[in-house]
Image (cartoon, rainbow, N blue to C red; front, top):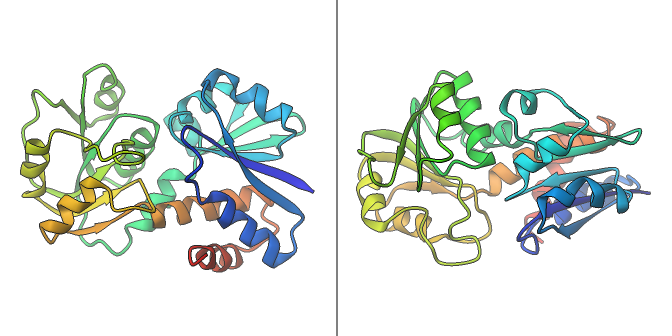
Length: 263
């Protein structure tokens, strides 16, 4: 039986085991998926092989560390420097990124997205920014401090910190920070977010399974919003294809992953 896991801190909230185990069970694929609470990013590779894993997903705050840990990185992950899916290929750690395509899947219903503001500057923000730029969408990045903004400036994003930010018109505002995941924090000062939400058509949050304080603000203003559930589903489908070496069709994976959200 193959063994898979998700690495994160926190990780107890993750729905990934339900999603992937639903596919494995319903389709008779001999595999099991569990959670691994990882605090020290530098131990990721060591623990991966110690647990005899065949593959894994990686969530906050370890996606950039996962990139460093890999023996080889393929596809979009190589371009962006962020890994959220790991495969054990004959004792070598191979890294992929399914986050960005998963997010594009999740916002299919949003119309006329040409200008996006991303809040946060971590691994998820990097993946989304690069993917959006590939789609010729204008990207602005808002982060608490300057120290993580250089990468985004270099790839062509407009960057700001909380002190020098000036609001413009946006089609979509996306929170990629962990604010609201295990607390009631906002991803930026409330006054700043109040102004931002006056100038956007849609709002999305990478966090799923709860109405975050950020999404509550959007709801109160009657702005169309989405949590990260569809992004989770989209990236999960692509990751499961890699886990099963494309032996299961994308349609079947999607069918049983969607059903797992009712559990």
